[in-house]
Structures are given as structure tokens and as C-alpha cells.
Length: 365
Image (tube, rainbow, N blue to C red; front, side, top):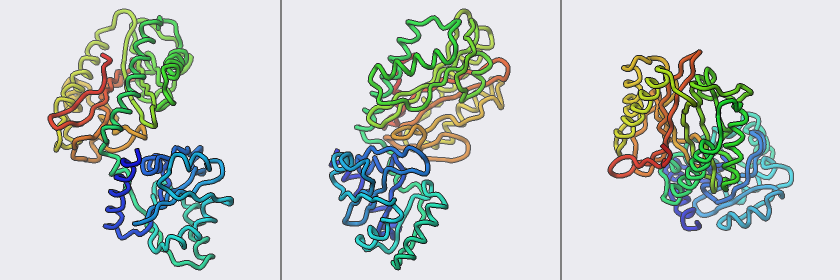
């Protein structure tokens, strides 16, 4: 792990040098973990487990006393500083010791209030430092997964799939509420060894399944209607993400047509994936098939998204932003069709881009 983090830091330093940033402050939780191994969690948007400060020669992890032992054990490459009155108060001393002139920060994570407080603290201390907002500096490194990361994703996916297989085999869905179904899946993943969930389990039946991110409720599952499940486990920080839509009893004609359309769209998209292809082009293949089959306007979200330390990360596969796909990228392929009043069907697999095309990571039908 030490060598892996050292390699990541070397790539980051090269990027910072090109941007003429002498010190980079890392506040995004997933980026902090990616570059140091420190697993401290931010419990709320306005709370932080700490920050990394990376220069051309020095590595500093600033945190509070809650994480003293954890930080030393998990981030041995970093000098650890513990602040008592918050990061902003300690920041002038850190920047002075690092001889910082241009401080890069992750603009997506810093609030206006936090930025204002830091500026005032720096001015009050009399040091001259220019703050430089950045976007996606570390995220662009995380987009290509190392084999060790892919193995963790596979482990998380195995737990998610084996849990669902056991759930479907051992439960009679008819009469079960959505909440009860979601809980059985959540409990199963925990019992199977998941560190946590990737996100709250979605279990949506009948008309509720037309809501792509439905919240499980007290509605009871009935025969013959679509039941959409979306779930994932997390292992060693890495997320899995999978969706399946099932039916108890005999499916109606609408279910059969929609399911076959979604499944074909997914297979067509996966078959098209290869290094060098546009993410927009892959999205368009699935979207065009769905529209051709008479469901124009019923597939509203993107075809997929990257998954790793965060459940949603780069690359995105949608009509709005284009990415040229490359070897080592891991993402979902999840076309869906949603019909208000009837329900919806979504099928989601995870793939990794290999030299000769897409490797589907899923084993569950």
C-alpha cells in the first residue's frame, strides 16, 4: 500500500507543478484516503476529519485529537499535526512552516464561510499566501483504477450479489413491504462482511418503481408487478452498485417488452465499450435503442457512472459530458425505462475497460 500511495503522490506532484501550485490542501474525504490511507470520515458537510497538505517535498496530515492514533497508524508517510481550535486557526502555522506561496484547494469541498474564515486568519497572521481554487485534480487520477482497486470492487460486488441471490431464494416477496425487503438485503450484506453500504438500499414495487431513486415504504409487493432493487456493498472503502428488476408470478406484456428493451440496450452498450470510444457515444447507443422501441422520454438519467471510493465518480456516461474511455476505468451500465402509473425497469451491471473491450464484473443474472 505504501508504494501505491507514493506513486499516487508522485503523479499529483507532477500535476501541481504544471499548475504552479506549491502546496495543495486536500479536504475531500475520498481524495484524502486515496492519497494517504487515512480513513477518518467527515460526519457532516461542515465537519472535517482533517486535511492533507502536499508540497514538492513534504507531506502533512492535519487533524484533531479524535484521530491521533488512527492517523499515525494509517498514514505513516505523513507528518501529523493535531489542532485544538480548528483547521483555520492552525492553518497560518502550517503554511508558514511549508513556506507556502500558492495554496491550491478543492473548490468543491470548501464553503464560502470556510474560505472567508481562512482568508481572514491568514491576513490577521500577516502571511502572504494566494488561494487557488482547483477542480478534479485528484479525481482525474482516481478515474483510472489500479488492479488492487478493481479487486476491492469485485469483493464488494460479490457480497452484494450473493446477498441478493440468498434473499431471492429464501424469501416470498408477495406480501412483503418494500421496507422489509430493503432491510433483508441490508442485513444480509452486513452479515456477509460488508464494511458498510454503498448507499441506502432501494426496493420499489409497482408504480413506485417508476421513481429511479424511490425510498422504500410500507407498500406491499403484489404479484405480476415490477419490483426494482438497487443496492451495493462497500469493502475497504470501495463501492459496488447493482440494480435488478424482478416480478413475482406471471409478468404482463408491458413488463416483457420493457425488460427485453432494457436488457438489449444494456448489452448493446457493453458490446460497444473499448478504449478510445466516447462515453457519449455509448450512452447514445442505449438511448437510441430505447427510443426506437417506442419509449422516447422514458429514460431520463445517464447510462452510467464511475464507481470506486465514491459511489458516483468519473467517468459519467450521459448526453451532457463527454469522456474518452480508457483502460482501467470502472463504471456502471444501467439503462432504465420508467412508465408513470405502471412502474419501471432498470438493469445495472459494473464493467471495467480492458484492452479488447469491457469486462463485466457481475456474476448475477
